[in-house]
Length: 227
Ligand SMILES: *Cc1c(COP(=O)(O)O)cnc(C)c1O
Image 1: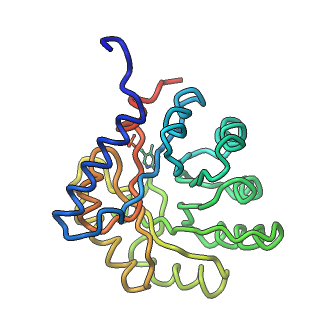
Image 2 (image 1 turned 45 degrees about the vertical axis):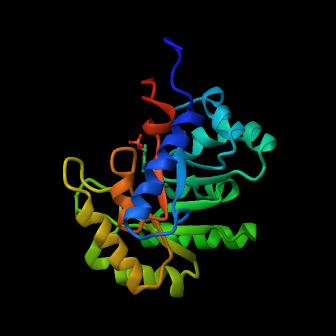
């Protein structure tokens, strides 16, 4: 095994164990967190072993890449759930609605409106998450915490979206815990069940603070090849 890259299936098992321990420590049920396997940049050959091991929830951050890569995999494993975790441009909304199961990155009224119109057109009701810019970072996507309550209400009541929860990416180099706690607090006051938070480096912290979905790339598939 000296030259073999660690298998995604083995990594998934180990991460699931770590999450179980974290959940037990927090007094949460052992199955309350779903691992979203972030397969961006990795090719079908690298993704396949995770599917063959029974994993079914995956995250991609680019519409175009997912459309190129996933159709044959999904034909083989039709119960796969694909979640868009990257920024969505309005000119890609049609393809995104046609292809993904969940959009995690709703972050502005124009996008919310475009999604609502397109879902109506395609007669599809995708679940959506609203991305919150918990660190108020100017360069980062997401709605500012101060505007979150109004935007969540608008997504539900004005645009009629099926809002299932919230998502965040804490600032790099900061303790993520306060950001996870803030996300959980905003979700709680709107009765939103899903919390997509935590990545490879901090998924156990997120699990302790209420995550229902952790987005893990490197921890499962190894370092992403650079293009
Ligand atoms: C790439 C990505 C991840 C996965 O990050 P890792 O550190 O590789 O686990 C999670 N969330 C989002 C939004 C990403 O773009």
